Image 1: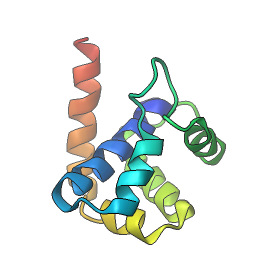
Image 2: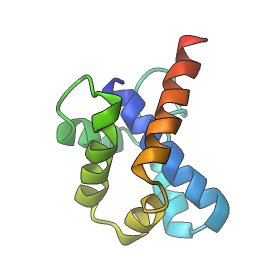
Image 3: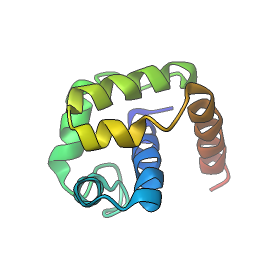
Image 4: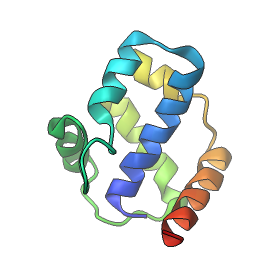
Length: 108
């Protein structure tokens, strides 16, 4: 998994929570975090992805290590609405969804 794929997985987890709960603060954060607004790697607000890259310094992440890195990033953001939104996912669920996501990229 590369750094952008990790960023995208974090977005998917938060977006899933938002779909169920519709919190305004989280919605605004997701709007700025969206990795799908522009072509290529980045986010709707380039500063969000730039800060992510400053925090996650490695280019490649093993899937089995990705959940821990994602949790550290969420803690680093230090926004209660983001932390709460991320808490629903377990490591097992994260690993399963990450594998599915990576496999779907190979089919494209």
